[in-house]
Amino acid sequence: MAFDKELDKQLFSETIDFETTRITVAVFSYNEGIPKLQLARENLNTNDGSWTWAKLGRMTKKEAEAIIPILPKAIVHMK
Image (cartoon, rainbow, N blue to C red; front, side, top):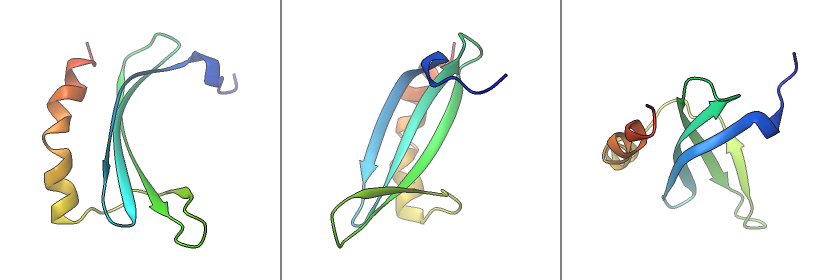
């Protein structure tokens, strides 16, 4: 069974912007299944101003401190 974008419902999303990157904390439910938390990073292309997805990997202390207050808001949507 292939992934079907139409079955992937976003229940919550909040994005924090930094200088040249942004991190999104989101909750998704696929096919009305168990809601799951997703952390995603996007990097700013300074040449054209577009955002490009990047592996989240490690976070700076500033980034980690910024997402901590958002996590309880996201967890509310994971019932």
